[in-house]
Length: 145
Image (cartoon, rainbow, N blue to C red; front, top):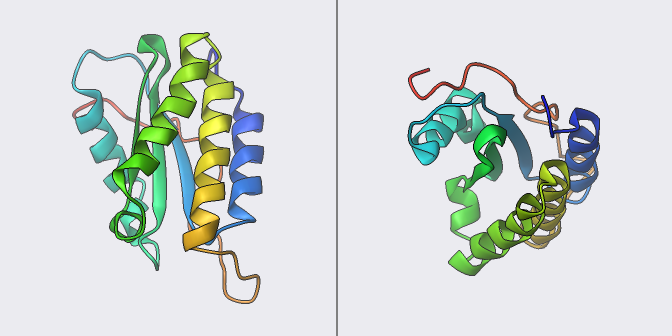
């Protein structure tokens, strides 16, 4: 996918998840003209993001062709963090996206999420398991599917 470095994304996710029991995914969508948030919500469900033990998964849903993205978190995170957490993540990603650095924006956002989640959902080597894949998802993300 043009503009997204899969290896850097996977490395950022793995590094972040070594600090937290939270799960982070990136889903990259082909171009479409529908509602990006609705497509992100469908991807959240399709990718099993609500199936984590602590309901602490975060999805970065990106439409590179439109330089649009949505960051969604599960209910366990919402119980611990305020709205400013989400504003901070969006600002972090947006800065790089505006410069045309999609990978840099995602990596910065993943690092910020990992750091913040580590306070609320610390990593415990004895009990933590990687509940979701670390690879970026390039599956069917058309708004209808």
